[in-house]
Structures are given as structure tokens and as C-alpha cells.
Length: 241
Image (cartoon, rainbow, N blue to C red):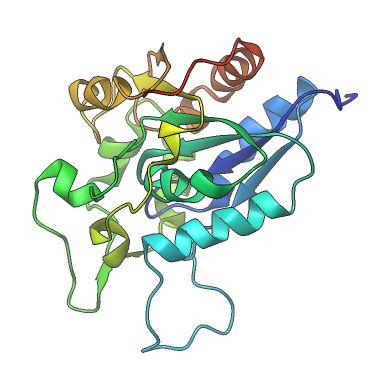
């Protein structure tokens, strides 16, 4: 498929416990439609090679640095798509990234300065005693309720422990206040209640919906890719004042 060089690139940011692998099907669909895409591994769930046991685990601010590094490697404008927890470091990273054209939060935590994921949720911080949060025991139902069984089982097997600090470090700068943003509400989500998503979406310049669970990148990758393409080519919404 020929790539339209006048279009922006996509940078895809995964959520907690996941990795860049979760975007593979969406990237294939975007490629088929002529889009360039990139995916980043966040160190809070994917420690770099050579990471020593006992070394300080990566938190949200380290994830934001990884996103900034990815953005610096992309020439031209970028649409950053952030899923779930990935919205937190994305919000931090895009504030000072000159090539970000817009951000899209996919069932994502579009937090404001001073908020962390767990101050927004108001729940206890999971911890297995090592500073790591293990994947949820009910991950199959929570994340992949509408994903075919075999695909869901493969995804569950690839989940990794998540650094607790990533959930508790607050945002210092809300990039969506200066970067145009859109929000995709997942109407059948069992991980982040759609009512909380709609609350977060009031901070975005445009709101869209998918009839999916928490992980449309696996349950409906083609439909998600088509929606991202439409968002990327739509008029830019004004950032909130």
C-alpha cells in the first residue's frame, strides 16, 4: 500500500500491563489504509534489556520520557493515540513536543495537572510487596470481553507486571490544554466504566464512540483504525481554555 506522505504519522501508546505488541493489528490496518504508524514500549511494564533486579522501577515520568524519545524520532506531524493508563504519560509528554498535531485518548486517562491515575479512580493502590502491580486475575473478562477466545488467551499470556509508581505519580503538565485532543469512549468497557470515560471526555475537543470492550485494538482493529483515520483528517478542535 502506498503511504500518503502528506498525512501525519500515528504514535500508539499502550496501557498498563501491556506492550507495543497490542497494536499490531491496528498498525496493519492503518498500513493498509496508507498511514504510517509507530508503537512505543513503556518501561513501567517493559523494563529495558539489562535492567537489574532491585533497580528503581520505571514510573509515569519515565514512560513520558520514552514517549518523548519516540516523538523525537518521527519527522513531521504526529497524532498520538493513548490507551487507558497510557493517557497519563502521554498527557505529560505532549506538552513540550512541537510535532504533535493532536492527541486521541482511547478509553484513556485524560488527567489534569496534579492528578494521578489512582487519585482520579479513588481506589487502593495494588502492590504485591515488590513495587509491582500484577495483572488483574480477571484480565480475560476485564480487558478482552469481546475478543475471540484464542486471541484473548494469547493477550493474557503476554501481560506483564506494572510498576506501582506509574499509577501514583501525578501529572505535572496537562498537554491537552495546548494540544487539540479527541476522546474515544468504549461503550462496553469493563475496566474503566464508560461513565468515567464520558467524564474525562469533557476535557477533549471531540468525542467519539466504539461499541467495544476495553481493548478494541484486538476486538475490532479495522474499525478502530478507520475511526483513527477519520479523526486524524478532521478539522482540529480548539484546545480548552
